[in-house]
Image (cartoon, rainbow, N blue to C red; front, side):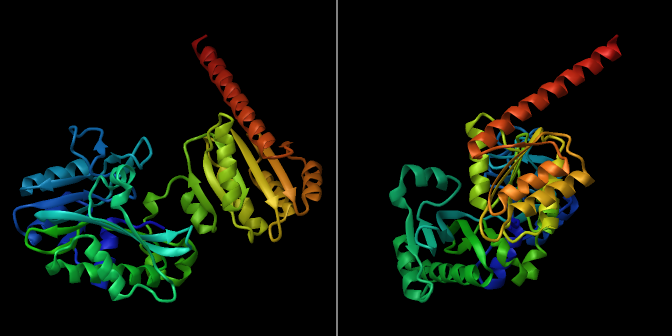
Length: 415
């Protein structure tokens, strides 16, 4: 689960990580009042969306170079920035082509920055450990720096039994060439990040940049926090931070039913059992020239009702031209559970697009026979490659039929 920068900074402040003075606003008047309360002669106005690349992003109606992070050197500049951001869509390299609507802006005190560091913490799948990632070359270009100069990236895998002690954190701070005056603060920030990571069941904590100001302050100018969805039941306070407006079509319903669902831009609806199978399904569709409409992973412990809701999400998407159900029933997940869900979903919302099913594993033969007897017109496939091929062809056929139907209506009106 993602949260906004202003929410992450609130959590940083609660745990003792220094941040600039600031506040969140949903109206222009609120933004102006926050700037006046902070005082000084310069502020930073930041669009709050769940995507990176905000500084380099753009608004359709704004002049080139005026992205989602701006320095305001007067109250008038604050007003102009808030007016252009609020209610408009910010387009970045990490948003959809249409962008993400900005409902809030964060206004904070501007700092005179002397140098910028990068600090990140995540789970390294190779070592199976929480790993601290750091660089003395922080800032907006950290991705390109990591690609062109990988030697500038420092990594430290944390032993889960020992945790991150002061000595290890101090050693990391020294590798970042932090001056003695700021070393103790940087060390404390690194230790606090690890404490937050464990305490809050985070999957990612990122400070980019951790700035050293000309006044000698060590301060987090940006904050990214992502949480493990599977642990949210332990953190109702964190769960309350979820911004439902950031969820795309179907994603809110998926969250409510415990389904792992991500909306994509294609027209082939995908349902698979297990994250690995779901990724393989998406890849197979791409490989055969199709475009998946979503990533959907049904948990292996899912009952018929939850699988039915997953199918209902696909059937309610007007952009879906075909559906591919790819299930390998192994152990807990049984193919007849999927079959019953398809039958129930079809009764409530009859299939209007072709459905391709590849069922293998536990009770597969029984499930296929049940589907054939129940009546839904289903295209069966022998393996994933066959299923993806049939789903891509079915989607193309559906689009062709829709185009012919549209043209016939146009000709009927014009005639």
